[in-house]
Length: 352
Image (tube, rainbow, N blue to C red):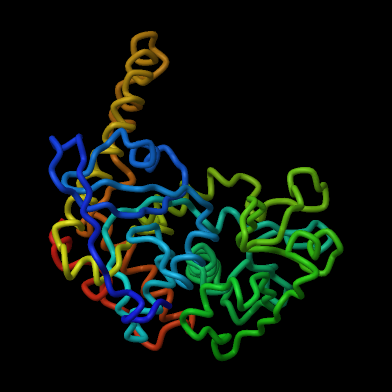
């Protein structure tokens, strides 16, 4: 993690014609590219009092750069790593209740046909790959496997791809939790290669996107010997959501604490900009919804469902999801205690 001395913040003021030549803060922001972040990246949503200098990069690379070097004033961040760091007393970062990525991670589990795995319980005793043991995606997948299907992390043999120089865990002093078997995949290999060779039976989160951190490049869609653990992933996601009400959060926004302490208003202005960006996406989609409704392709119930925001920002609306993942971080032996959300998020965002 960046030390408090390295995290000292010197404000850069620039003139911006957007605000009639007034001085504004110029801040570096890193984001992954998705429909909800694109209006911010492209500058279509101005931020009051701030000129953003955006960098678009893969989350694996972004988190490594931020945790190791503190390259950006604001960025997305691994929610689990932020929780772990907070439990250790690290105060480099302040969380903002903006959730840039959500999905049902346990439905992404893949298995080899040769392993004989047909259902989650068959994972017991198997060799399972993971890019990084403490990454949020893996924590959500393990949490679902344990709480929904009775498969504990200690029931499997883990193989981690990321080495220490590119790992989140380097910033938090990661060690394998008690009772967990964890081996490091050699730098000359990868999860994808080990799956194809039969050296792994499964993987809980498979990343092939080009970035400076992850090494797997095997296209599993072209490998007949590799399949998803849940054949009907959409049905499992719906079952899980209907039962638990959880739509897992993976990334949140953070800002340097030194910046927050000097300019706390930045947190609220950035939050407001992301809310506006998401609303812009919803408005753009509404035009297509209206066209489909006019031709009868969507009935009244479907139209009502599409107007519902299942990915809300703010702390209050997502407290259950956030409490669950911080509980999983502690439960899976990655933090000595369950971190309170009030410790993670900017104080002036707690009522959002």
